[in-house]
Length: 230
Image (cartoon, rainbow, N blue to C red):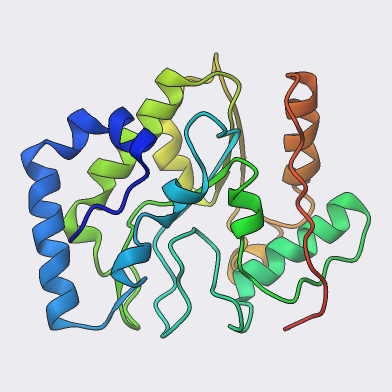
């Protein structure tokens, strides 16, 4: 698999991408794409890094793995391609933004590129998945790479907001230096978790902006186009 990775991130992760496990990971991922339908498309696997540079990074949102339906995944956690029906978890994210920010947020697309371009790293623990089989590429050891990414951010940045949604993301957050960064946790936005009262009302989006403002950083504009695809 070709390493289509932003040059700044390549430099930061240079020691990691030279490790034997990473070379094996790329070879094994290539084999998966040859044998099965996998997502996102190969050229979008590292998209989250290419939209959100290291020096502009202000917020990290951690997901598990890409959406596994045809045409959905675009390389950004919780994000789908333009023209794709908005998945339930993302619908709940948008509903919480509406409630949190006191507005009506009904975007016409679930493509979260506008967030990424403002410095939100939408990082899945596994960057690839087999069609219709969630968590199917866990065995490829993507977690070693994404753990290293989180460690690099924790060590190399200051005052980053980490939004950890659900038990899986909480475990990924163990490497974060909480003396340098702020970590905000809640349940996952999936319908099961949200319906159990673990998601709605967390106010993560206003809390993030309050922290960024207090740190002298530009707030994230969470709201983009309107025109519902719900």
